[in-house]
Amino acid sequence: SDLRLELYRRLAQATDQDGVRAIAVEVEDRYGRLPEEAQLLCEVMVDKTIVRAIGARGYELGALRVVLSLGVDTRLDPAKVMRLVQQNGSRWKLTPDMRLSYAFTQTERVDRMAAARARLGEAAGCLAR
Image (tube, rainbow, N blue to C red; front, side, top):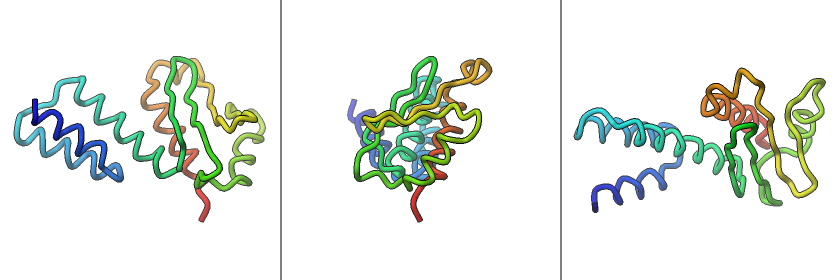
């Protein structure tokens, strides 16, 4: 429907978490509680705003890991990323093709969305100032 397409368009254009959440609140106010699928869509869109802020070209959330595909135009500070990857016991890896990945712990696999959000926040902590 046109309303659904408009919602998708607005969510895709949201520039930050607050923007996504404001749209979700507006839709709930108008139509009532969002179905679980719509709530999940909003959560994914929040993640996308973080991915865009990082300047990543891609984002993959799998059962075992979260992966950010970086390009030369990423906004992450290379020195900070290397510290993140090289920390003792780090679950972060950076591949030669500029894929920054984090392998979930067994506990994190239970709620991958929350774990991925936390790791995106950790990666965003590497933003160049």
